[in-house]
Each structure stands twice: as C-alpha cells, then as structure tokens.
View 1: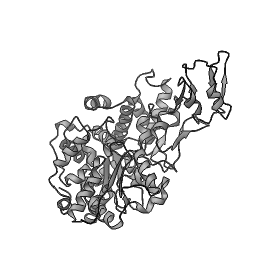
View 2: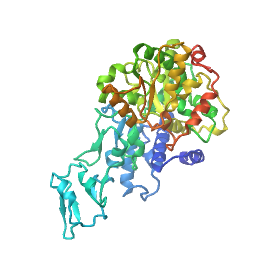
View 3: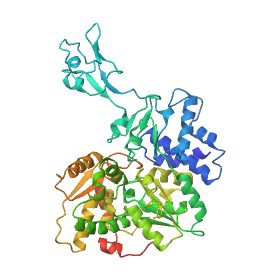
View 4: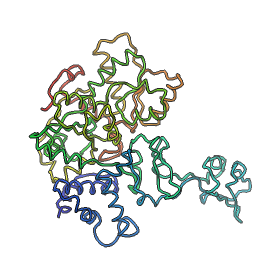
Length: 489
C-alpha cells in the first residue's frame, strides 16, 4: 500500500538512472518506517517493497537482489560506523565490472612490426598463430606505452567507471574481492564515484535516522527549534515544483525555520575579502572537498587556506549564538558536507547534513503533496551570497565585498577552478610559486555546487538559473544582507 501511495508522487520526479531511483526508494522506505517507529522489524518488508515479484529484474537471481538491498538499507541507516569515510563500497554489488587495464581489441591486424612488443619492458605482450597480440595481465603494469605506439589504436584502456570518475586516484581494485576499494588517505568524499557507478555499488552514508529523531524530538519547536539551512543550489533542484513549495514542505516535515546558507556566504565573502587583502594570497574554504584535497595532496599550501568557516558553518554559528538550544540540519547537493560536519571546528554548529536526494525521500515518506502547497519564502541573503552555488560566484562575491569595504589598494586577480582537475592545476602552480593569481576559488564538482553528487538530476546545470535566483534576493548588497537580523522568519 505504501508503494502504491508513493507512485503518483514518484512519477513527478525525474531520476537520471534506475540506480538513482532505487537509492531513492530505499531511503524513502527507511524514512517511512523510521517515522512510524517500525524500522527495526521492517528490513524484510522494505526489501519486499523494493524487490517485487519472484524473478530478478536487475541481477542474476532474486536472492542476490535482496542481499544487495539489505546492504543498501544498512547504508541508508548509517553504514559502517567503523569506517570514517561517508563514501562506502557495497562489495556484493561490485562484481560486474571487468578487471580493467589495457586490452587488445579486434582492431589488431596482426602486423609484423610488433612495436607493442618492443616497447613493453615487462614482456607482457605475446602473439598467437595469427600474429594477434595478447596482454598478460599478471605482467602488465598499465604503463600504456603499447597503446601509444600501436598504429591501429588496437589497444584500449578499460578502466572502471568509478576509477575514471575519481580524478585523485583514490579508487583501486581489491585484489582479493575484485571489488573497488577506496583509499581514505586520498579520498576527499566528493562523491563523483557515487553517481558514475552504473551498478550503484558505491554510495554515500545517510544520516536521515538522526534527522528524523531530531524532527520527532523538536516537536515543532516545543522542545527546541529545529532549523534547516539550505544551500543556494536548491534553486536548480525540484524542477517539478516551485521553490517556495519546497520550503513549505521542509517546514511540514517538522523544521521550525528554513534559512539560506547563502546568508552565511555573504558573511564569508565579507570576511574572506578582508583576509585576502591582508594576506595577499588565499585559497577558498567554502568547498570541503577542495579543502580536504589541499590538506592531503598539497600540504605546503595548508596555511594559505582561508581561516573562515564555510557558509554552512558560518550561518549555523550565527544561529546557535542567538538560539543555543536549537539544532541545525544542512540540506544541499554535497556528500563532502557530511564529512565537514564531523570536524571539530564545525560540529558545535551543525548537527547533521543531508542531500537533496535524501530530502526528496523524506518528503515523500510523509506523502507531502509538494505541488499543492502554498509557497514559503527565502529572503535572508543577497544576490552575491546566492551565486556561490555556481563556479565563479565566490570570486564575484569577494570582488563585491572588497568594493563595499572600500579596499582600493588591493588588485584582486582570482582564478575560478571548475572541477577538481582545474583545482589541481592551479594548486600545482601555486605550490611552485608560478601561479599569477592571488585567490583560488576551488570547486570540486563540475559547475560548482549545482553539479554536486547529491543533486536530484545530474545533467548540465544552467548557471543563468542561479543568477536569476540571485537577482530575486531582497537584499541587493552584501553589507545589507549581513546587517539583517531576520533569522526565524
């Protein structure tokens, strides 16, 4: 019955893949039972809702499908608590990808030049009776030299989708299980691998049970006020409903108030501009995956990271200074935020974090008809705080803050890095003192936060949509926004 009630709502949603829809269904059913206090005895019931019928639809057999759903339920209820990373591999679901590496394709013509053999220093290439090349995986070290010299481009590098998605080389193959494995010493929890895995074998832990517990305990503000801090990238989500209706739906879930993280972005832009003009060179602190990347891969630049909190933490600190007994949940597109809330500098202010995917599941678990709701209002931030959602927005905001502060003797020369690869190039130059810029705006996700892994859809996002949302802001300057004290409207 629960699944039947949810179908009309689910049809309104646009999911990129069946993997994403499967993840949504698990989250929705876990949330539904958690709200009804029936979760502990309902794991089998949840699996039956997800896997219907007696024939497999996704895997080799119904038993494997149910086993994998069981693992998904575990991740939806917090995952492996002994693993500090919020990104986890479901080993049993990660067994369909080829081993990867270089392989000879049918394009091999059996030429007699054998350049591939000559260039291989490991003796990994042999030939059959037709002179067709073959690669011994036990000897091959995936150097790629054979592919470079092949005149027919007959040697291809087959890499797993998760490995291709991970630009920092934190994913490799477990030699024992043949499943993907994540090196936590390299991983920045950006979540790029989560969406790219076609089997949904890599997922981000969910803390919706903690959030549901807070919703119940807050009792609409009677015991304490529960705040939702929403990322400005919410403007590019929920295409089937109006943003104001989504804000109302969040309140119907049990949140006392909904506040813009963009308001915190205004505060950060103002402070970061002052810090930059004083120090002369900075890297931004807004993207937790970018900050983690610097700390792990470019430790010599750690002192250049802005000492300001992220917009999420900055506005949360402000809220808790005014309402110490409250609890705060961040809602956005970012899996790395789930790691950020664990930091000693942040956890006093943010109690939990969830993605837009999880918000959608929570709303549907309560059968809240979003499209029928009245429109709520978000009016805390300025245009400049809201455009933090896109690449280049932070740099624009810092430039505006310098102007509003009357700083005339500092020549801002920012570089906006769109994606972790551009971040790497800028940081590499900075580490060698050859970067001409004095401010690095680092965004780990392509396009900025609007391209985060926790988005409802993952196609190219229109940056103009973010700017249009910014122009709707009541406050027109950063100074006006941070001078407003309207929390709890």
